[in-house]
Image (cartoon, rainbow, N blue to C red; front, side):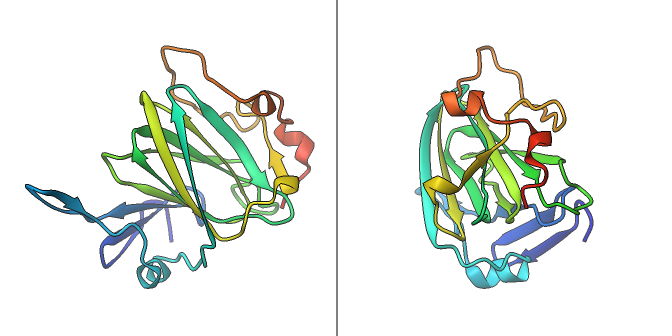
Length: 192
């Protein structure tokens, strides 16, 4: 499939991005004067859309405007992730670390928000990060392997070789001490 190609199955539309395997998932919602309802995951529909993971862990974070988390990955036990925002808005990024991939070292980004209800699927072999664009954001993600603290890897968020085009904000980005000092992309020598 090529960038922009879509598969619709049930209440989900899966759109190919510029990086093979990374997909934007749009969700059909049902609403009336009471509010709205939506399915956020349904395995048979995701399988039709080309996502065949068995998710085993759900995570959630709350962050304030300007918080940048990433770029993170698991070294020996890589994880596929299905990410979404349930409150607020973020700019979400996946960086291809699959050695031998035509898009190795390239990134894909998408705005995810409670309003657009969009999800991003990131397969194994990618670094991941996000920047909070709203006052606060609640970020949720499913993983197909459990998190192992001793298996963490990272890349500097502003690495010149990757050159992620983070949105500008009216304030400094807020990073953990660890994320301020992650190694350069070139130093990885191919993570996967």
